[in-house]
Length: 159
Image 1 (spheres, one colour):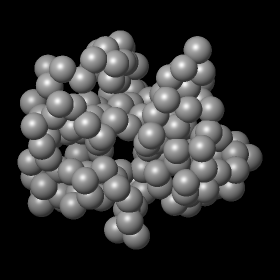
Image 2 (image 1 turned 60 degrees about the horizontal axis):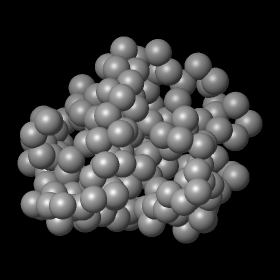
Image 3 (image 1 turned 45 degrees about the horizontal axis):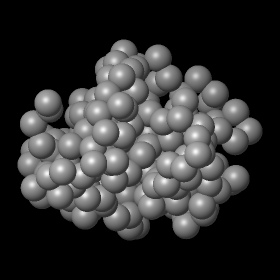
Image 4 (image 1 turned 90 degrees about the vertical axis):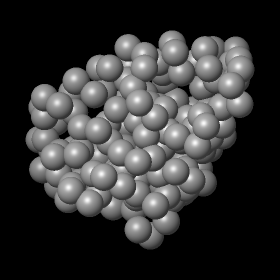
């Protein structure tokens, strides 16, 4: 594996709205220094306090909270969505919600502790639409027009 590249897991389009994984998930290879992905991760990290605020209050019936984290194994990084998030006493826990393709240190269903610094994106559902998911927007240039249209239909307007 080329250490100058990273793998960004793009949740399949039909399942983005359901926040579940399947064999139809796939990876898109993106350069570590891709400016759009770098900006998307920076924006997601900058808005993480918004995510935590909604996660704690859930005033508008928000559901399906997920965090995307990078896990590195033997110099290669793969990104995973974590579900069943718990934030207690300064500790952050989540359950791996994707099958790994290159990382051998975790598997689907593993419950892991994660440092907040490893979070690269976040999502939740409000009124049937996905809020967040900045990294998928940075992948549009790698998708077909149909895939972009399908994905955009699942996303809430950016706030």
